[in-house]
Length: 463
Ligand code: BG6
Ligand code: GLC
Image (cartoon, rainbow, N blue to C red; front, side, top):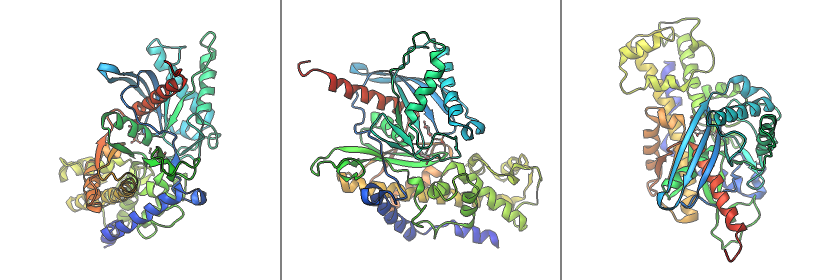
């Protein structure tokens, strides 16, 4: 049976996963080393975030959060002293496919239009607060205030943005909208741009001080972690005796892009999903794990097995199962713990599918293997990074701050990730903390940490 072969092709042995951990560890080192960074697939991008919040941060901040399922605008109020707390007010705004794939100017004008609407509703226009901008794409930081987009991922292709300074594009768009609406508008505030992994790590670190890794498993997947500055060859050499750290945005989604590390575990379906994506050949690891692709992998298998008469009596020719881009919510629904065969059959009716009991069992098995493989591969990355941290800091019990729709909403992913991580790293005690309010809160905290540090620098010695 073709179905058995397909299912088998998604199973990866523990020996292989252990080999992949070593390969990932090697690629992390290549990305850190100045001599090999150019050719390295995992770019290990320095974030210039060197300090996590210490509880003394305060003030009101705005945060923008772009790159996940939705765009969010947030107002974040941070209080310190006896009453340390963070209050948040936020609003979601959808980003259409046209905006993702149009021009950069259209995209940034839209973001600022949402920001303006948010401020108008709160009667807060024309006096902009400092902005923390979660921009969930690979960016190169030339210092904390200059952030260049390296490449788009996750279906975004907006023109005129790659190679540009994201903070400057945002400021220009703010100027365009605010200048004509606010008298004497003078934009002094530069925004602080952070990756969503960094925002997530910082946000979790505020509540759980051992947090030194930030993981996203959502539309895309990525990890950041605190690395010793002396090991980061791509920034000015640090003092070898200095224990200062900096957060590295690994951009691990690109694992396997050039090294071929994943070739032996890639399936025919991974190849097709990759070849039909807008960034073919890039972010291979991400495409085997994250929510933007998991549903589509399952859909391709369904279509193939149906053609071979191994699955489903009939599929309506207009069914969305026959056109690209099935959402991972489909997989989550099929694997929903409360769902029995009758409920799966009913659910499939909505997709124009006639399925018998065997079909439902086979579909469940397909969703299970695709999901488990994603969780197993993600565990590989978590363990590879945790091993580095253990080596650097001697910390055997790191905390990972996590966010993303797959981690939050997929019914089995989290459980499998946690148990596989434990199994692959029996000598480590890795714990996972779900980020409370998304990475926008972390971006505001990074802006607040920066204000605190700047304030310290500008204080006179006798103050
Ligand atoms: C959110 C963050 O909580 O998680 C986003 O605030 C991030 O910045 C997102 O990109 C990832 O989730 P998803 O599933 O929406 O891609
Ligand atoms: C993609 C982006 C990365 C982001 C991740 C999760 O991999 O390149 O920057 O962190 O998705 O959103």
